[in-house]
Image 1 (cartoon, rainbow, N blue to C red):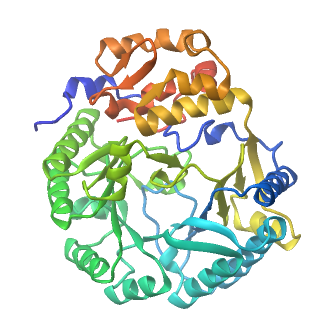
Image 2: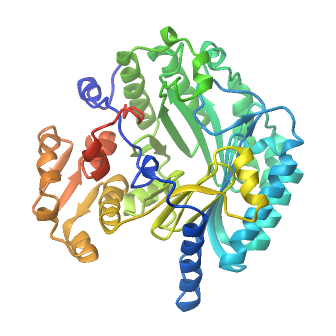
Image 3: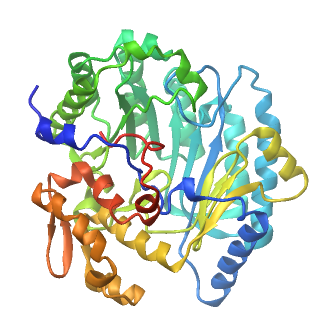
Length: 462
C-alpha cells in the first residue's frame, strides 16, 4: 500500500514517547501537591482577575460511567448498568463546582467546555441539563464558546443528538475506532456503519459546528486491508476532524486489555502499513494533517489555526483556544491552574470522601519550576507551530538558546540529517516529513525523559 511517508522511516520512528498534552508529563506529578496548593493557585487567579483581568477558563468534566467495557480502553471508567449511580455523582460535581466558586467568585468567563469519559451520554438528557445549569450559574460561558461532548454511537439516537444541541452543545465526538465486524467483536464494541452514518447526518441537521471521529489502529484482528476499508468509510462520512490513535497494549496496567489475545494483535509491519495507508487516504480525501494523530478538513477551525500559527495544545489534545487555565471536574480529571498541574482522586470512594469533607479532591500535582516553564514553551512551540524562534524564547525566559540547549541541539543533528528538522542559527523548523515524528523531536527537550531514559511507560509514537 502506498504511503505518503516512506515505510522505512515510519519503522525507524516506531519508539515509545510522550504525547505532550502537558509538560512536564503527568508521570511527574507528586503527592506533595494537594488541596492546599491547588487552593492557592485558584486564589492567585482570583487576585489576577481583580487587578487586570485574566483570560477565559476552559472546563473539563469527566463522566466515568459506561454500560459495557471496551477491551482496548485505558480511560478511567466504571462499568455499570445502574443508572441511579449518576445521582450521587452529580451531587458531588455540584459540590466541587461550589468549591471553585468559593475561591474564584461567580462569573469567571469560560470559552471552552468539554464533557469526556467514560461515556458522558450515560447521563440522561435531564441530568446533563441539570449539570449544564449548574455550570452556567457558576461560570459565564461566553458567546461562541466551544461546548463539546463525547458520544458513544451504540447508545445515541438522532433524537438524542437533537436534545444535546438544544442543551447547548455545538461540537460532538463519536468513538468509532473501526468498522470491521471481526475487530468490533474482538474489542467488545459492536456498532454498524449505517447507525454511525445516521448519527453524523443527524449531528449536521441539528447544527453541530464540528463533528469528530475517533479511530484506533493496532487493534486485534485488524489488517492493513480491513483498516483501509474503515478509512474509506470515514472519508465518506466526512467528519470535520479525525483523531487517529495507536493502540497501546498494556494488559498489566489496564485490566480490560487482558481479554485481548496477544496473538490477535497485528504485527509491527502491519501497524506501520495501517498508519501509512491512513495518512495517505485522509490526505487524498482532502484532509489537512494537523500534527501527531489529528486531521481536519481545510475549512475547519483547527486547520485555520494550524495555517495561521494559532494552534494550541491541552489535556484534550490540539485546540484553537489560546493557552488558558483549565478547571477539571470529576474523578481522575487533570487540570491546569497558573503554573501548576493537578489531578483529582482516581476512585469514586476517594473522590466522594474529599467532597464530603468540603475539600478539593486533589491527590497529586506539580508546581512548575522556571526550567519547566522554559521547556514547556519550547516543546509546545514544536508540537503546535512546528517551529521554535530562539529570540522569542530568549526574551521570555532570559537565556541564550544555543548555549542553554547546546546538548539538545547536538542531539537534534541526526533528525536534521534524516530530513525531519532544519536547524538554523536562529530557529528550529519541523519539516513536512518531521510532523509525523513531532513527539520524538519534542522529547529531545524533555529534561525528565533525558534524565531517566525510560520511555517504556509511554505509548509508541507509531
